[in-house]
Image (cartoon, rainbow, N blue to C red):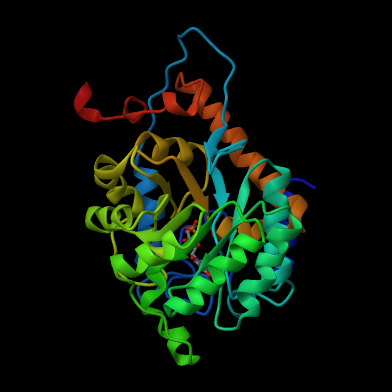
Length: 342
Ligand SMILES: Cc1cc2nc3c(=O)[nH]c(=O)nc-3n(C[C@H](O)[C@H](O)[C@H](O)COP(=O)(O)O)c2cc1C
């Protein structure tokens, strides 16, 4: 199995809503929900991709070479790469029934683990949409991160306890799902969470708590005040609100405000190891990748997820060699090309 055969096989199994485009940039699928696009005009997805592409990298290979180390420490554990699979839920709704939320999560969680990385799992209107993916984390010795939707507090507290019982690495909440009309239509409303409510939830557990869906400095500071271990700078792949800026555009100011005080993850349009270097240079500690992981899982299950993770990891390593960075902490703003420096 190689990456080309994974893409070829994914085209057969993934369904009609994802075209497995050469560039997964949100253009062809724009506005398609159910499906894999961004909401409305779809620009929340496509801008993430486009803005990352605009950033260019400084190449310099005259330096005293040391073996490259792509590993990162998070949650008191060591990972081979700062790369995580983002939570994706509603597989049958958005892709095809070749995989469901359980079989998809098993491919993601075990494939990422085989590559020395880790995967997030999702949540949904029925209990089983959280419980079955969580079971796959438990099967992997806890090596994964369940993501809870912003339901009523009692339900969130109950799901946090389940994450603890499964021995998960951490637990997350996609607070940006707060306006998802789809969930309300199915009779299970979600809502914004106050800092006090988040404090109560976060202090109920010893697990590191990650708040996913932060797009402003104000939001990041509130997550910090609530006691979060980390945030994911994310616009949910453009699926919850049309016309947001690109995640990479809001990253530097968020990093300036909270870097070193909490961990900063980012997602949205990250497709290559070069993209990973770009966002680490702008202040992120690690990345999440969404849609391409779904393509990998449909194209060859856990083995394909492992191959895909290693592909991005290899690109990261190559980019580090070409930019004079032997460890992740060497990647800083000097790696980013700024025309004004000429
Ligand atoms: C079909 C689909 C389903 C998703 N489901 C969830 C989910 O259940 N929970 C969540 O936090 N994010 C969900 N996301 C958002 C991703 O976790 C992630 O933020 C986004 O896909 C990152 O952008 P990228 O796909 O461009 O890498 C979903 C995204 C897609 C495309």
